[in-house]
Length: 468
Ligand code: BGP
Image 1 (tube, rainbow, N blue to C red):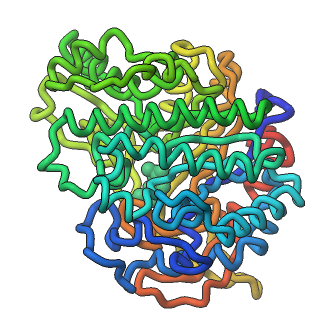
Image 2 (image 1 turned 180 degrees about the vertical axis):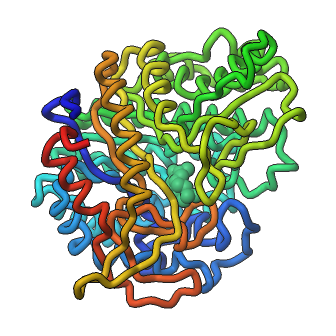
């Protein structure tokens, strides 16, 4: 029995606009890059949006948000992480006046959350660069993006101040290195981009993020703004010092993204890293001061750990969503080859907290699985004991991290309702406590069904983790 979770611990779930809302042309919305990625990051992009893109309807959260939020409230959610689709507010991304219908939509979503005592946790940019900005500026390769993003942030901060206290800037900001299109709205193919292009684009996101933090604190003095990174820990494959150093260097590449946003400057090791990569960040006057607007907390996704070796060709490659590594022979893996490592979560929490002494927020964690609906005593459900085990094991380790002394603000399980996968753009990879009747071919009633894990999570929340 665990009692380590603090009384005000923010239990909840996480979703993203492009993966659940659908209705991507309703309410005056403009297109985002997601609308030309019908196969997800693993596939190719199209010139124009395709009707075959499951995101056209998503899980119809745009119309069913009230029903879905009621189900989250029934589980006892204290918080809901969702993103605002930038292109609902500014359809092209660079207009001066916002789209009122888009703002009203999020008024309704936020008010619905608040009416159930659910604290909104809003991601400002969840892989959703407006398509027009991708086409006109090649996304975040252009410094101009900073101003457009600032305008968007100011608009939503002014509109939702007093209602939304917790904000995240860029979802998995470090993903830009691996997927420049998804992370940076960059249409130039990755093979044609230099490391200079990519890290310069990341710099623009750092500046935009720092400006968002500054603005948020000015407009909403009680706001708490976090960075969001893809949280991966790299174990050395063997105790050989060469492997240890390889894992240190690999971790440094990841830590660069939190270091800049949490410490407010590029770390000392970045000099060598950038020299080796042939990168020279172009800084404008005032950038160093701007970066000093550091985040209030660190949020991250956690799905797996990785191994690194000085010579990775000697080992089997591990699979993963956005980064790859060496397969760890001690760990089981999911159907998609993601290595399951609950203890890695405890390790990573300690790693971040030792480094920064700032509160952490686990904003994504979960198991993507093909679920099967069954009928039991007249009730349609999914017996997802595998998901319960996965989440239970991770939460026990999170509890241990808290006992270790790590300050953790909350935990939002990824895809608390089934939604479209980011990597595959399919619906068959399900994470939810709530099943949505929609298939990869677009068929299905969109009906919602509670899985077995629904009541399990409800119990976890109502006992504040003591039932784990
Ligand atoms: C993260 C993204 C999410 C989410 C999750 C699961 O990288 O922030 O948007 O989708 O991964 O990945 P997938 O949907 O590919 O299973």
